[in-house]
Structure formats: structure tokens, C-alpha cells
Image (cartoon, rainbow, N blue to C red):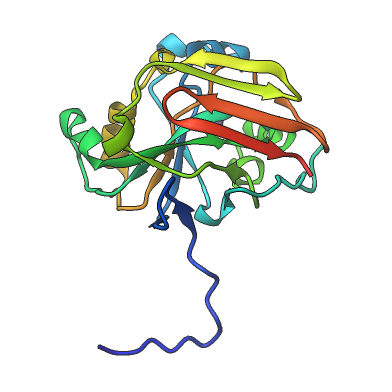
Length: 230
Ligand code: MN
């Protein structure tokens, strides 16, 4: 085996912790589905019934676990989006819906933090979304719980409270595109890999956060995410 010699030190590869275990999951990419709950699509000004799914990406090193969310620069309108997160341990191309859940290793609770003002400007100008979606610390997440323990959640409450006040509320059964369908559709466009992470969409009620806010998110059967805006 050849030893790799780097010309400069590499940045540490991102990982996610496993609940109740010392193990960590290596992270490859982060895919996020847009407007996957009908009521959220409507609140963003779209008709969900006419829209095939679309995806965007965050950077793997945008994940944070167990740390505060630092209010990001160059924005005055940062929104919370509570989401169930799926982590794959198997990938492939053109995965059938019936085979897709066998690729999912486990689930967590995540926040797709969004610089809504920058995203809105990008939409208006037909520009890419990275400045709105794929910035540092934009993907807070909990420890991951193995599907071997909890199964593959397809119904149950998903909500987010800000300073104890309920802001977002839905049920996983309101997802327009189910987890298995998301894996299958993504695999037609990308070759999925072990360590790919999917943010599966947010229910309605997204809104702004400010420094000092405490966000508490919940996905039934998966867990609770508590994080402070610093
Ligand atoms: Mn989202």
C-alpha cells in the first residue's frame, strides 16, 4: 500500500455520531429536497400538485452536531426548516423504489438553515442557491439512530418550537415524495454512495431566527434536536 503524502494538511472529513454507540458515520454528500410538504410549498408561493421533486445540495462540512448555530454573515433573514434526515450506507444508480429503504442506514433530526433573503434574491435572478443554503453550520443535526432499531419512519409528528413556542408542525405522512422515492429519484441523476445524507423536506411554518433563540425540533420515533442561535 502506498502512503499518501499531502502537500498541505487536509481538512478533517465530516462524520455523524451514532446514538448510543462510539461509532461515527462517514459523510459523503448532503442532498436536500425542496418543497416536500404541501402546506410548505403553498407558503412559499407554489402549487405543489404540479411540481416534480427537485433537489439541491449542502456541503458535507456544513453539518454541526451538539454545538450552537452561529448567526451567519451577510444576511438579516435566517430561517429554520425542521427536517427528518436519512443517512445511506449503500448507494448505486437507478435504484428501484422497492429497494431504496435497504440503502438507508438510519435517521436523525436536522435543520436546513436558510439565508432566506439571499435565497430569494438568487431565485429572482435565476442564480444558484449555495449562498442561501450551503453556508457554514447550515446543517445542524442530531446523532443518527439506526433503522435496525427504529425502522423507517413514514408517519408521526414533526415539529419545531422557537423559545418554547410552536412554529412548525406536520406529520411525516404529509411528505409528497417519501424517503424511498427520494432515494430512487436521486439515484437517477447521481450515483449515490455510502455516507450520503438526505434532508427529506420541511413542513409549513418556516420563519426567522435571531441571536439568543433556542430551537427545539422533534421527529417522532427519531429524536429531539435542541440548539441555540449564537
Ligand atoms: Mn429544506
